Length: 352
Image (cartoon, rainbow, N blue to C red; front, side):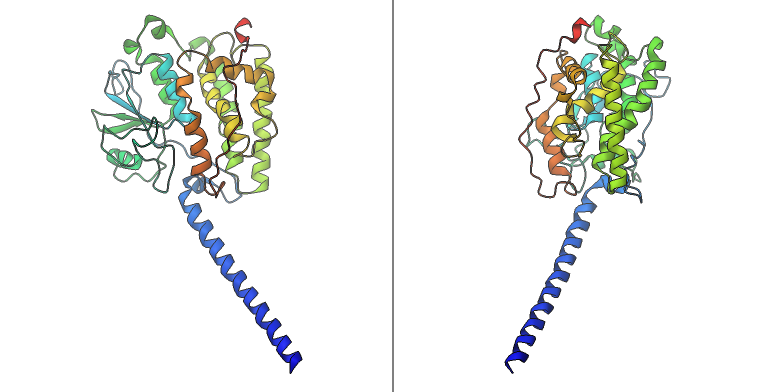
């Protein structure tokens, strides 16, 4: 009888363990599914676990003479941005350098990207409500332009207050429009003369963009959003191969094409400025930091210290957005305290 009781007790214990395991598996599965549904980027991960960025949907062009149907006018266009987003901050950089702050007002979304996408709030520093369309979420702005729109809701988003539509949500095209089509509204003559895509350098700029975008700009996302070891290995190798190539270029030149800042530098800078604080740890791009590269780090400091640029970089928005929005990557949403980046350090690149 004693042996039977012991056996019965053991069987009952094993049964309870199995039941607990099944319950835990179900709970974990439910939590993972719920979390995944909130991560919009997961819809862009292919069957092999590789992140494939979707193309922007609104591609209208603003022209100085209005021949495109969208004429450059002060106050007509409104820019929706996130201070956390590198793509949006490209537009902020060119807007600041060209002195277009008064001509093109903006709204800054909440740094937290939740289940319903980008939202508007005035309860966090530098975030603002949508005073143009009175929307609670950026998705609503897109639906005002197209009630049937079902694509990604992204920043930057350039809105036409006259035609009540999204003009463009592709950062590379918006910065070119800001570069040339709004010169009448630049604050100074020097800003009017600035050209970040000059005709004599276009071929070189295009060539730089052709590999910097997939290897570095999007490469950090391909690394961070990878859902397989194979996809991650390919992506992170691309990232550091690209960074080594840029390091070599910057050992000979102040900027990517020579002595003057161009569009290629703007596009690269917004990724590099986030690297040590976010991509190195959160996206597992931890082979090296920017501070480990002599020329790259000096280059970041050089651009950061250009008047007006530091105001487009908000590390609180950047760090909080990535570590708290990506629940599938950082489920406890713990935000690290560092590093101390030192972007105001002397760089001496102006002597190159």
